Image (cartoon, rainbow, N blue to C red; front, side, top):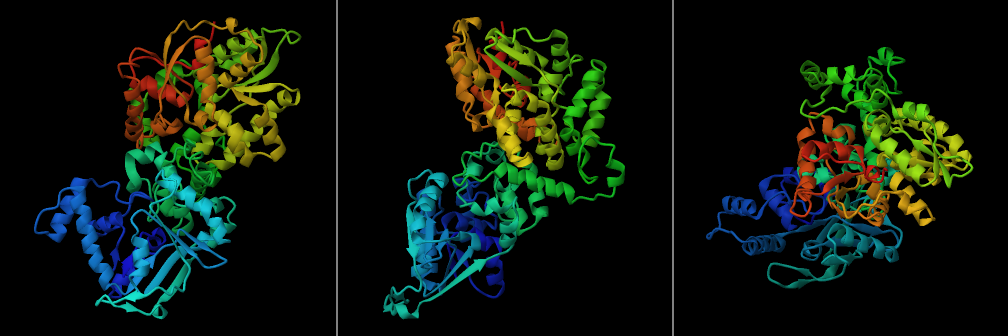
Length: 625
C-alpha cells in the first residue's frame, strides 16, 4: 500500500491497522516518509517534519537504510527518497489518499499537494482508496476554486500549490504492470471512505461546529507565538496540532486529549484574522476549556457555591479560579494596600503561592494602589463643562487601570479633557476577560451583563465609551456577541473605542492638536497589543504619536509572551519568557536600544518591565500634559 499525506487516516490509525493485518504500508509524502522511518508523529499540519533538521534526517537515513555512500545534502536525501519510494510505487497494489475536497455533484476528489505523490498513488495502482471526513464534501465542482486558492495562499503562501489533481472516479486510464505493459482501465477499483468519528455530533454542537470549516492550511499555527516556540508535539493532541487542534481533538478524540495542550492557547486572537474561513479559534479553545473545567470532580460544589465570587462548579482548579477572579483579588489588594503588597511579595507568601496555586515566584506580582481610579475620580470630579464639551464619554475602568496602573487612567482622563471632552468614570467591574481566559464562561457572561448595565446609561444618553486596555475593548467588540443579547452587544460595540483611536477621531474632527504635548522628535519603540492588532487599531496610535511629533519604531512580533495570567503560571513561565525574548531582541538593537519603550497592553507592559532595564509606559502617558 502506498499512501499520500492524510491526517484523517492518521486520526483513525489506518496504518497500524493495515500493518497488523499483514500489509506493507509506505508513506510517499517526503516528510511523512521521514516520520515513518523515525517512528514519530507529525508536528505540523502542512509541514509534518518541520521539527527535524537536514542533519537529523541524514543521520536517520544513514542509520536506517545504510546506503553505500552516506547521504548528506538535501538533494542527496531527496533523490534517495524518490528512488526508494519509486520502487514502492512499482510494487504497490493499493493506493490510498486523503481528499482535500469532495464534490457532491460529480464525486470529484481534489488532491492538493506539493510533490505530486498523491496522483502517483492513484495512477500507479489499480485500486484507489480515498479516506475523507464528511466535512470535506462541498456541493459542486464549480465551488472548488476559492477553496483551492485559499489552501495554497494560507498554507504555503502560493497562489496555487504545486500540484492540484482532480479525479472523478471510476477512472479509465490504463493501469501498469511490472513489465511496463499497459492494462485496461476497466480493471481499476475505487473506494471512497467517508469518516464520521464524531463529526456529525460536532455539526450539531453550536460551539464546536466551526471546527468543521477548517481546510487544514495551518495558518493558525503559523501565526501563534506559543506554537512557534514549542512546536506541534507539545501544542497538539493525538492527531492534530495548533490552535484549531483543540476543536478537532475534543470532537474526534474527546476532551481529555484536548486538555493536554488546551492551556497553550492564550486567546491572543492573532489567528483570527489569519484563518481564511474566519473560524473563531480562541472561542473554540475557551469553550473546550470550560467543558474541561466542568468535567472535573465536582464533589466540592456544596462548599464552593455562594462562597466564591464566580458562577463555576467546584471542579475548577484553584489556579484558574484565582486568575479568573482577579477583579475581586485586586479589589481586596487595593483595600489593604500597601500591606497587601508587602505580604504578597514576602518570601514565604511567594513560596506558598507557587506550591499551592502555581504562581511562579520569579514573576513580579502587581502592586495595588490604595486609591482606585474610580475613587480618585469621584473625589476629583469632571473638569469640562457639559455645555462646552466637544463630546461626553464614560471611561471604562478595567481592573488593572482601576487598581494597579491607575496613572494611565488618570493620563487618559487628562488627555481627553485637554481636547474638550467631558469624562465620567463609572464603577463598572470586570469585563469578563479574566474568567474567560480560564474557561469560566458562565462567570464571564455574568461579568458582561454587569458591565453592560453599568455602561448602558451612558450609551443610551449618546455618550461614547472609551477603553484603555485593548483586551477589554476586544471583549466589547468580539466576545460580547456571544455573551450578551444582540441589541445590547451592538449598542455597546458601536459606542466603544480604544483611547488612542478615540483621540485620533477627535483630532480628525477638529480638536486642537496643540492642546497635546509636542513630541519634539522623541524616539519611541512601540509594541501594540495582540488584541489591538486583531481589531486593526494599531494605526491610530501610530498616527497620533507621529502627528504629535514623536519618532516611532514599531515591533513586528506576534506576541510579548505574557498573555495575561499565562506568564504568571509556573508551568508556562519559561515559555512566556522565551517568547518575550523575541520582542526584547527587537527593542535592544542599535536603532532601538535608546528609545523610550511604549506598549498599549497591560500584559505587554508587565513583560517588558520584567525583561528590559527601561521602564515602559502606556502611549497615552506621552500625551498627558
